[in-house]
Every structure is written in C-alpha cells, then in structure tokens.
Image (cartoon, rainbow over all chains, first blue to last red; front, side):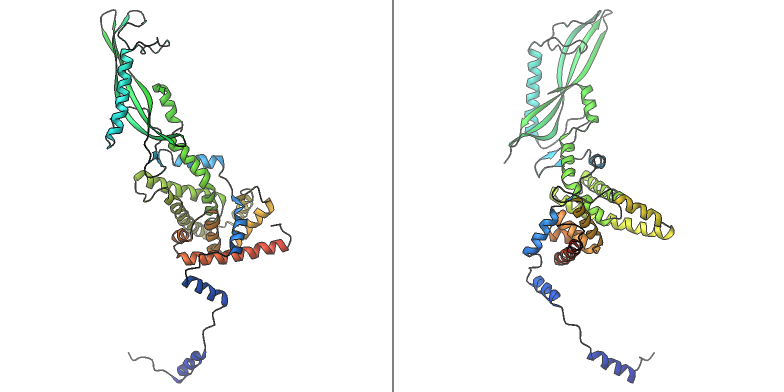
Length: 214
Length: 198
C-alpha cells in the first residue's frame, strides 16, 4: 500500500498550524511551577494558614451512639497495640487452655512462682470458713462442716494455667502486666457408703506484675 | 483480685477488656474525621456509614490475620484509602442501578434526610455557618474537596494525601491551595449576600 501523498491542501494546513503558538502560561500557574521546582509548593501562605484555622473551628460531627457501638463490635476481639512493646488484649474466654508457650519465660516463671507461693501459703495457713454454698474454701486438711453423710477426706489446690492478659496503666508511670492464673481446687469426699467422690472447682485470680519500662 | 468462674462467664460476655476500652476511645477520637471524609466521598449519610464500617472491617481483618504492615500511625492512611476505594465501587454500582431504575423520587428523599445529618458540629460557629460550609464543600469539584477534607479535618500530610488519592505530594498541595481559594470565594460570596456571618 503506498503512503498518502502530501497534497497542496495539507501543506497549507501545515503552514497555518505552524503559525499558531501555544498560549503563554498565566502568572498563577507559573508561580505554581516555580514553587514546585523549588520544593515550596507545600508551604502555605499566612493568609492560607489563617483561613485553614478558621475552617478548623468547625469540628466533624460526632458518631451516633448506635454507630459507635457497631464499630466497636467490629473491633471486638482484636488486640490494641499501644506501641511496639505494649499491646492491650481483649478479655479471654473463661475456659481452661494449655499453658502458653512464649519466649517470656522469666516473666511467666515469676508469675507462676508467685502463684505457687500463694497456693502453698493457702494450703499451710488456716483460712476463714467460707460462705454457705461454696464448700471448697477450706484449704487445710481439717474437716469442714459438710452436708450429712459426706465427709471431706483430702483437699488440695494446684496451679492449672497462667496467661498473659496484657498491660494496664494504673497511673501515668506505673504499667503493670496482668497475669490470669487459674487454680484447680480439688476436694475428695467420702459418703456414708464409703464411696469416694472427687470434686474439682477452678478458681481464677489476677496477679499484677510491675512491668519494666525504658 | 478473685473471680469465680460464674462471674468470669458473665464478664466475658460484656466487653470490659483493656483492648475494648482502647478501641472505643480511638473510635471516638478518629471516627468523626473518617466519617466526614466518607460523607464527602459518598452520596448519603447511610452510604457514608456503610463505607466507613466496611473499611474498618478490612482493617480488622488485616490486624487479626497479622498482615497489616505498620503500627497505629498507619491505620488512618489505610482507612482513608479504603474508604475512597469502597466509595468509588459503591458509586459505580449505584450508577449502574440508576440507569436501570427511575430514582428521581428516591434522590429527593435522600436529600431531605441529609438535612438531619449535618457534616459539622461546633460550639464556636453557628448552624448557618456550618450549613454554608457544608454546601460550599459539596459544590466544590471533588478533587478539591477531598484534599481539603483530608488536610484540614483529617490532619493528613500532603504526602499521606498523595498516597491515599494516588497522586503526587505536589499535586495534592496544588489541589489544596486551589481548593482553598475556591472555597474562600464561595464563602465570601455567601457573606456578601448576607447568607451568614464569618
């Protein structure tokens, strides 16, 4: 296929077009280009800053309570990182779980040691009689006031779980790590027929461990 | 602190954890800015709330899965970007739907509802001023009003705004300054007409 020849009409059109010149840039645009070249485009003038401040006096409307609740539900169960080192955790479900395996061995060891000391102390020290209905607050081997035909035989308490619940700030400069500790109280009883019944009841305590901050 | 298992069960159902309180406080502080941007990007208050909530769900999913890159300071830029994309998607769906259906009356009702959901509240300015500001922002071209909303009330930098809108920092700054000038002219015009005092 041969290319289109340049006709005399095309040539005169071309000549007419060459006579046209692009419009001169307006001052505002020139100024903008200069500012961009000198990296000053992001600097606002005093008048612009004043106008900006006057607009900022109008605050965005607050969220309605219902909408805020629905947004909060979206984020439920998600930890909130305060910074690189501190993370707030959502409330854990009250079920027993395997002890967590983390690298913070020394921290859990400290908390577990405190819990064990507490458990041992509770075993060795006499305790006040419990309110009616709990039946398991007696931490010594002496018999409790039990329902008829049932006599407690042994009682012990063991540490079943220790879990890191995150850090709270009780005052501005006193962070404390919350450790959730689950004890398992076990009481063995014998009824009138001599049958042995074992009762287990978990008991949850929260231990506050001072957290080191830089 | 001692807690029985029964109490623990009840408390688990209510949201009293440190994380929950922190999220609520964060939403109370930043939610209004995000909702304002969402309103600027959408056609109704209801759409704005839906888009904002969907953006928050995306953030929640990324945080839950551990995929989110960056700390707390990266949440707002991410949410602004997500809101904008979701608003664009919603707008395209609405446009396709409106081509198929006649929604003239629905649009009129939507406009009526908007008067009950003002964009701004403030103690230092009156209702008329805030109303005029809202009208003026709506009349501005979107490319100006979105930059103004992000800069003034979203407290984003030009670099953040550029990332959110997919433009350069300098383009964001240009649009902002053009937009401010246009907004100032509109508000001055309203003042001359005696529509409000500023």
